[in-house]
Amino acid sequence: MSQAMKQQVLSKDSDDQLSNGLYGWYAVCVSSTLVNDFLYFFSMYNEPLILYRDKYSRAVCIKDLCTHRAASFQGGEIKSGEIICPYHGAKFSSDKTSKDPDRICCNQIVDPTYNTYARNIQLHQYPCVEKDGYIYIYYTGNPSTNVHDIPIHSTLEELEFTPISYGFRTSEYVYEEALLDFRCDWSRIVENHLDILHIFWMHGNSLPGNVVNRKTIKSFNHKITKTSNYIKCTYTHKDNENTEFITQVFVPPGRIYMYRGSPETARYIQVLDHIPLANNRARVMVRHYRKFIKNSTLCKLILFSLRQRSIFYSIFSEDYLALKAQTFNEQMGYMTNKNMKLLAEDKAINWYWKWYESCLKNDSPWDRHKLSPNTNTLYDDSPMTYPPENLRLERLVNYRFKIRLILRILILVGLLLFVYTIL
Ligand code: FES
Ligand SMILES: [Fe+2]
Image: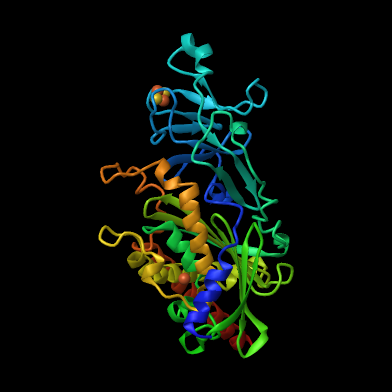
């Protein structure tokens, strides 16, 4: 197909609309991270937020702002699900038995004189749901003291957002996961994960097996299915239409599924969640579900999880090389379509950009909590779990992997020698 024809196909198909924009459900954390009495600080579109478990172990998401004198809870405490402000010691919790069970009210501030008044000091919240080991929030840019005042347009299930609602039987899988923070534009990371061809060229050396590497790179046919909830793109080999390379599903605003075959039969599913922390700060949660090597003892023995983690880290470090330059910079601003000429395989990316640009106009989430060059950088350090520009963690994981592998080989050789001597 000529380049002109490709461009025609791209623009003809791009009129269709996804119903959801940049406000809506986001997976922001995994359940295992959110232990009791732990404050998990993060941000969304520059807005400082906290996740924690209340006294009933329910996950809640609040704005990081104490409504007495607007202090941050950084440096504060949480005890038995009650959050305590570091500024004047106000204590907040929700109570299922109170007349305001959906509000997080102040129980006590300064001394008992204020205890009745204190109930009017309430924290701002976003709807928060825990499912399949993920914590989801419904982000609108406008939190409320009564969480039910935020209208939720569609449930996670209605949007086919969760792996189960999308058709995967998660009970048949085990998974490894990793969390990574990037100093780059959120939209660029989503786009990176919709880019099929770069997997061969950029990640060929890091991926196990020899199916995907620079020598096997070629163009694909692809079939696109669109619903109002998602865009699904199935890539098939050109020389054999019946052989699928991969299927990708983009469920806005921030989730991508990757698998081969159908949701019922896929051997593995990769679920990628993209969290817009702040200008030029994005977080990716990746979970790799698999149907093979499910026995946990065997997994430990062959160091499967450690190996998988080390693969995640090298792949994201490679991605970061491209992302750093692609992202916003003072001279060039954000890249636009004028800066690029897409191939047929980039069709899903083209649709994604149409969606993103229309969302920026309609929702404008970045305008709601603006950052200026003088904004303080309180949030720059605390949530950075694994910034790929800091390779310490990647090195540590690789080091642990190598040491444990050598130990296992030595033990195996020792055992064999022992058996040999006895016989
Ligand atoms: S600002 Fe939090 S107790 Fe005063
Ligand atoms: Fe990549």
